[in-house]
Image (cartoon, rainbow, N blue to C red; front, top):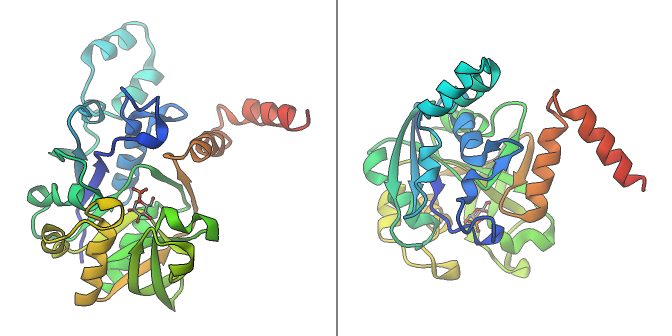
Length: 288
Ligand code: G1P
């Protein structure tokens, strides 16, 4: 399969990051200086995606505005000879073909994906959750796409999590079939620890076939009373083989306070312009 499109879900209310997400969409909150939504769009582009559909909810237009050109700002920077900043700002101007879909009511992740049906049409596509961001030797989505293309089948990102973390995630029942590759027999959204089929959690990167839309359209509310994407994937696994890929790299959960701080530190320590000062600061407070 050849995957050209990615759906980025940015319709959530961001309750885990209140009060900062009260007015500012959580997808605009930065990883150091770059909004999470831009980090995810750049991962999609680096993975070879050509068209991006961003699903937002009412009041979250800022997420899309971020990719528009701000002429006044650019003129200001140009007049002052701030070429480096100008370059940085221009990187976020229409970086790919981006379209918008709206989820009018918060009926769940699966329902949010369904809103992209018209924009995606009848072709395989990726789904990306901007709470999950990755620091990988090859972009996380690219790793999944390679597996999906090789198997000509849907693939989800997998990460082993601590037992105590299991109820926060979609958990899979999986058999290893290759290097980092697992065939999935079951997927369950946020199970209690004792009912979990494994400690393999789904992370927010998926490659799916368009028949998932039919399943979402008839999907019933599941965990938390919401139409869950995981439930549609479970239904999909009954129709065709689907796989999990234990990606290589680090994942940060931006929707979690410690995850958010960890991302700033982790990415900060990789930035040549920041690493030395940040490391010195961290050493000074740790040895206190
Ligand atoms: C969503 C998915 C869940 C997945 C998680 C990854 O949950 O429903 O299956 O494991 O993302 O971050 P949420 O974080 O929206 O509760």
